[in-house]
Image 1 (cartoon, rainbow, N blue to C red):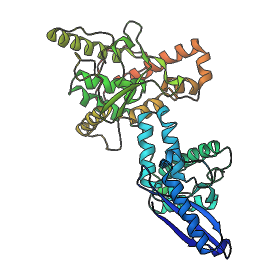
Image 2: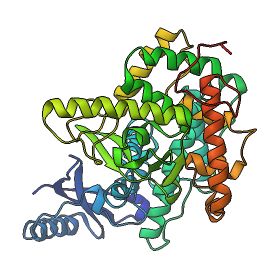
Image 3: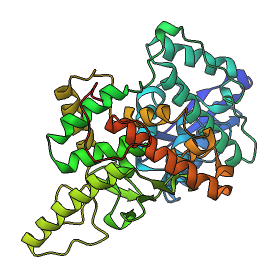
Image 4: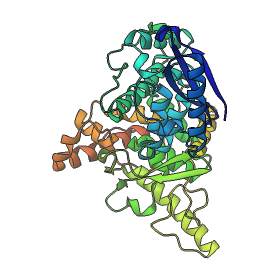
Length: 407
C-alpha cells in the first residue's frame, strides 16, 4: 500500500503530513487517510510505515459521497448526493429529472466541488451572477438556488447544525425585462376554436382530449390519466385523482402532489357529449376485439382494448400538428389551454373557486364551502362551454364547435 510524507512548516518546524492511499471510491476518486506528525524525518518515516501496516490489516472501506461524514469537509456535491439517496424517492419522476439536469449541467463541476463550510453568501451570489452572465434565464437560476438551498439545509441538519447554510441569506441578480423569458400566453377564444376545428378533423379521440383540457383547465397528465369510471355522464362531472408522468422507459400513473389536486369538476354538455361519442367508438372496437371495455380503461388510450395510458408527450406532439394546421401561432402550447381556462373564468366565478377548479394547493379553505363551490363550478363549466361553442351564456349547447367569428 502506498504512502507519502511531506513537510508542513506552517504547522511547525518539525511537522510532517503522513498520507496513506486507501483506493478509489464509487465515483473513481482517489481516497487518502492523512495524519499530522511532529518529530524528526526518520521518526516520521517509521510512523508512516506503522500507519501503512495498520491500514493493510484493516478491511478497505472507501466511503463514497453518500456515506461521507457530515462536517467541515462536506461539499455541495456531497449534500446533493446525500439528498438524492435519502429524499428524492419522495419526489415525482419529472421533478427528479429536472433536479438531476440542473445538478449535472450547472452545479456539479463548479460550485458543487466547494466545501459548504468554505462558502459565504458573497461566494454564492458571485456564482449566481456567473450563471446569469452565461445566459441562463431568471427561472433557471432561481431553480438552481432552490436546489442548493434545500441541499445545504439538509446538510446542516445531518451535521447536527455544525454546518451553516450559506444559501439562506443570498439574493439573485436582477434581469432586465428584455432579458426575461415570456410567460406562457393564454390563447384567444378565436384561436382555441380554430384548434378545436382542426382537432375534430383528426378524430374523436384527440378532439375530445383537447376540448376537455380547454373546458376544464386540467393538466395534460391529468387528462391522460382519466379512466371511464371517472366520468359521471348523467351528472356531467369528472373525477380527477391521478396523473401520468413520463419516466425512463415509459410512463407512470401517480397521485397528485397535494390534496388540492384531487377534485370533482363540472363539465359542460358539449364536452360530455364528445366523450360519449368517443366511448361509443371505443366500445365498438372492444366488441370487434372481443374484449370488455371496463371502467378502469383509460379514456384517451391509443388502443382502447388495452389498459395502457397515453403518453403525455405524444398528445403534445399531436397538439403541435393541430396548431400548425389551424394556423395558430407557435407560442401556443397544450399547456396554454390551462391558461386560457383560468383567464376566461375571471369574470364568472370567485378567485377561490377558480383556484380550486384548477387544482392549485393555495386555497384549502375554499373546500369548506361545498355548496357554493358546486354552484360556482357548474356556472364555470357552462360559461366555458358556451365560449367554446361560440354561443351566449344560457343558450343550449349542441356539441358542435362554431367556426371563428360565427354567431
